[in-house]
Image 1 (spheres, rainbow, N blue to C red):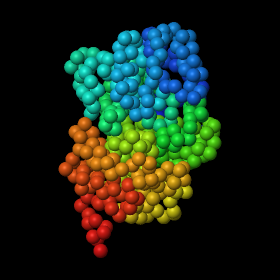
Image 2: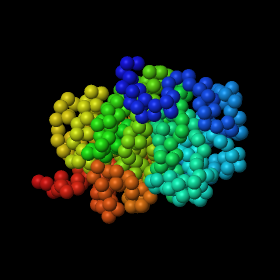
Image 3: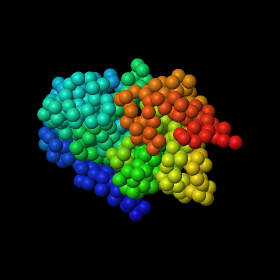
Image 4: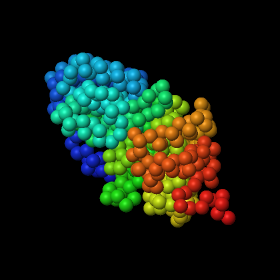
Length: 431
């Protein structure tokens, strides 16, 4: 469609010929994989209706002369350490020269991390943080096996990015490998696969796409990529606001599914331009009660108020998008400072309510004050400090309790007045 052309143009600029997206593309898996290697393992998700897509992939590999050594079950949601260990061990046994992953973000992330452990050894803890895989490769002279990532869900954009999220289920804490070395060499997203996605997965994935674009936009002010990030955010957020309710109403809406696929791919572009921050950081501590995309969506309105004084131009852009999509009143973009932040936060929460997502943590079954304590403790962990540094108002570990604490208490209650802005009097004391 013509209204998708700008999104497609941006994605071509991002990935060039290394990425294929559209409908009916699984027949291309074999020819693409054959460019990378001749002995493959397929790490794949199991999902309703997925068997026929897996069969298409297997047939395409065979027709292209790629030997399939084995298929391996993918990872559970949030890529638990246990699944990472299982996948790593099996890939180590098989010694493929090309990895093919077919799944959502968790399976693709586990494939990325599994190949790191197979090639470099050690434990996953050795690579949490930024650039540690590249450093180890340089020190050893080793290379990672090429990876063809085939996405199945409009969500994390894992098929296009340098991120691998791995979760310790025992502690309920997710941590992150960030490294250009783990970006899949090639990627395919056949939107046909998403037509049967359940409503919850569809909503969660689309909300994750918004979070990627929104958080990077906030953090891009003053950076060389800010103008490009404005384009990416404008298209990505607009597509979700316009099409998510429509797809939830009609899951087989092909135009809507394409829109969400493009939007979340743009979210992936965003997190390759810059980094996420508050919403993502806190979401890592809520994995036992919320999906990742839903957690980010619920938290970002509150971080929006906190960041407001530092991001007036991004806020006006988001306000205009929300106004045009019917989630905010006319004139919202004329507000200033904290008032603009509150108005944008309310517009984002209006989307959540429209699609049936809670707007406060207290509405989430299983939420307790312990989740806030866990999130505050995690924010002080050096392995996650890139999220604090990516904030448009950077925080140190020493500032977390004073400023992030009120944001999380506001998210629990819905009371935006609890949020403190750095360097400004608290609203309750400003009379």
